[in-house]
Length: 323
Image (cartoon, rainbow, N blue to C red; front, side, top):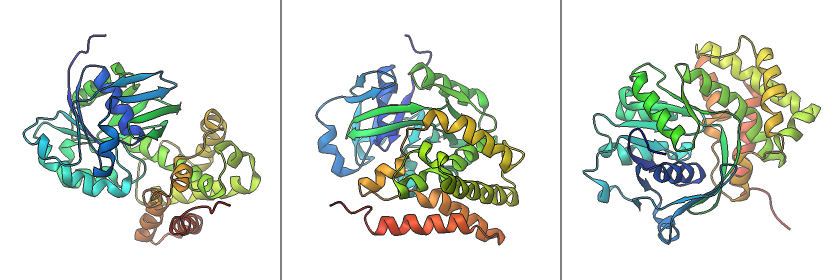
């Protein structure tokens, strides 16, 4: 298929998500470079990036993978996709800031709260976009990702209305043409809060108890815990006047249990796999962010606070002991 517009794209972070974006965008005819950590470069120099799973077998040799921006200085990027973990957002955006020209748009394609805010503070809101990603991918090895599940299209927008919707729509069309279903969203912040609700309720509990989303929803005790997590998030979001797509937590919970969980019932959360791999966890961008926002308004969020403490302890202990 002939692409309508060829973009010059920089992917920052070649985890599962970054690998999917880099592979499919390059295969669609765009110019694609990537930044990754130095330790991953040897494994990424031997061949094309590969994507498998529900979107089929795909591979593409991108235009370059580097740990430093030095080889990329002078390159005019149309789009920079930030696909690192939330705890690396600040260092990632500081690294790529010199590559963000006047017309560059920087897209946060990440989990949790605070990533867009960090990017906008660094490059300006007129160059910062927010994407809600709700397809799941696993990194099988450096440069090889498997797409395992998709619950909805990628949604992309500018929370403060600082970018022409037409420009955002063009990027969404390019992503869709590359095989990543994407739509422009004028209410992107509310859509992001939908995902925060979903992830904060499921990810940490699934990681702590080592079980699937379906098992969490089917168990009365864990269901009560998730209900409390959701109720507390609604209270915090309202106090901060954050936009929500739901009139009440009860309305959201009904949607959550009847529409959102069933299609992904057999899915383990990404945090579960991160614990298994001994990786740092993104709890500070999920339940931990709720705790911080609650403290700013003097709101008690005991369940989110307890979940955050347990996950931080699990992280320090190095996850479950084998044998």
